Amino acid sequence: MDEAQITCSLDMSGRSHLVYNVNMKKNKIGDFDLDIIEDFFSSLVDNAKINLHINFNYGRNSHHIIE
Image (cartoon, rainbow, N blue to C red; front, top):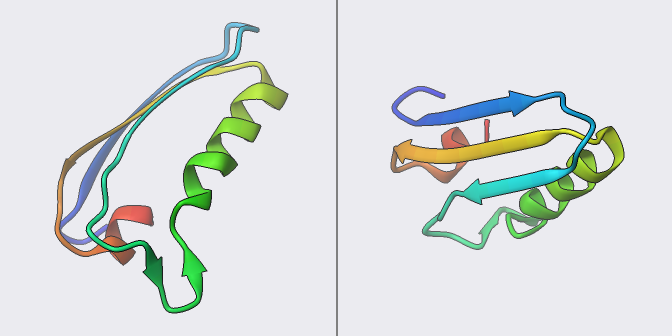
C-alpha cells in the first residue's frame, strides 16, 4: 500500500459485476504478468456472485498498487 490508494466497493447481491479502473505503468513485476489481476477479479466476481468496484485513486509503484 504505502503511497498507493485504491478504493474497493463490494455488494454481496447475488449478481456478478466487476468495475476495474486500475492502470499500471508496467505490464510485469519480475515474471508476474499484471494483466492477470483483472482476470482474477473477474473470475472471483463471477463465482462469488458479487458486485465489485476497484478504482485507482493514486500511486506510482506498481507493486504497492496491486497489494
